[in-house]
Image 1 (cartoon, rainbow, N blue to C red):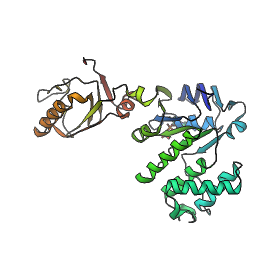
Image 2 (cartoon, rainbow, N blue to C red):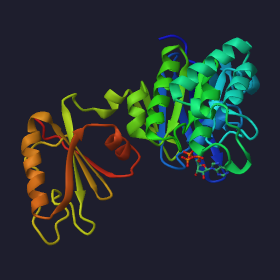
Image 3 (cartoon, rainbow, N blue to C red):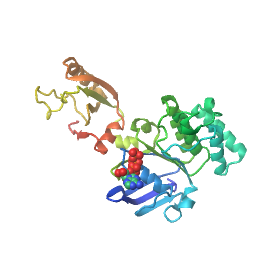
Image 4 (tube, rainbow, N blue to C red):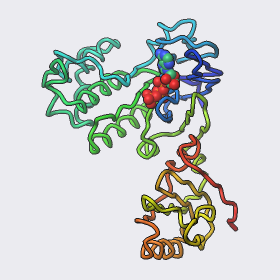
Amino acid sequence: MGSAVLEIEGLTRRFGSVLANERVGLRVGPGKVVGLLGHNGAGKTTLVSQIVGLLRPDSGSIRVAGVDAVARPAAARRCVALQAQAQAPLDGLTPRSAIEIAGRLRGMSRADARAAVRTLAEELDLHEWLDRRALPDGGGLSGGVRRLTAFAMAAVAPVPLVVLDEPTNDVDAARRRRLWGTVRRLGDEGAGVLLVTHNVVEAERVVDELVVLDHGKVVAAGSPERLRGTADHDLRLELSLRPDGPDPSDPSEHPARAPVPVPVPIARRVRAGRRVLLTLAAADAEAAVAWAAALRADGRVESYALVPTSLEDVYLAATGAATTERETSRA
Ligand SMILES: Nc1ncnc2c1ncn2[C@@H]1O[C@H](COP(=O)(O)OP(=O)(O)OP(=O)(O)O)[C@@H](O)[C@H]1O
């Protein structure tokens, strides 16, 4: 398994009466991309701030590449490249110079830093803006290009641990995909990556492991496959409820009309606002779709869709953002 590039145990940090991190444990191995997911205020930024020595924990330990980050924050910080959530101050610089300077500051030769800029510009499709100067008050470069530049500044030089705090905010869909590709490359080249994100659907494609924080505590951790807890051939049927309508499949919600039970076994049912997510076996898809089509024809749901299972419902369930039922009626 190799020794961890980030090892956190029993980490607790309080702000007054708020327990921002409560006995958090987390491990990032070399070459692994670990996603840290959580709602607004879950404690993600508090955790990152302690890893990079901006905040001292009340208790617990953090080791970065074997260095005790609580006792020796400056030494630990040298082993980490951070893309902070706040936009990096770039005013007066071009993306090319900002990325090259970030590489030089981490000990790269000028030639190596320039070569790394070329690689990143290619990977992230940054050529168009590479020599455009960032101006004060957000001028010159868009928020998305500034975010990509900050990402490239973190990714430019090899370090044991890369910490990315919401790296895709403001970034367009095509370049987000490119950015995830670079994150995967960093892992494949041996770095440990801690990826903080709200975007569970996109993160799922790139991470080796996930840690879900909820109100400061780790509520779920493991590989996407293990967390999904569903078989490869499972599918998800999503119902979009009418704005004023109850869930027609839920026996507990049928004030006016009788419920219509799903005609097939359901492995997991999650309700998130007006969406109902039902996990079922692929072999039962035809019967389930016929059932959903009838509900739609009857005006009892607005729409439905059959999609591959994802971590979204697991995440919603783990963080209490939805009501979940695990049904065990499967043969
Ligand atoms: N400096 C601070 N003083 C007081 N409370 C704080 C401070 N920093 C964070 N908190 C509180 O600690 C909790 C965790 O906040 P944190 O910023 O770590 O969450 P987050 O998961 O990063 O949220 P977001 O996704 O919105 O960035 C929140 O309740 C927040 O209000």
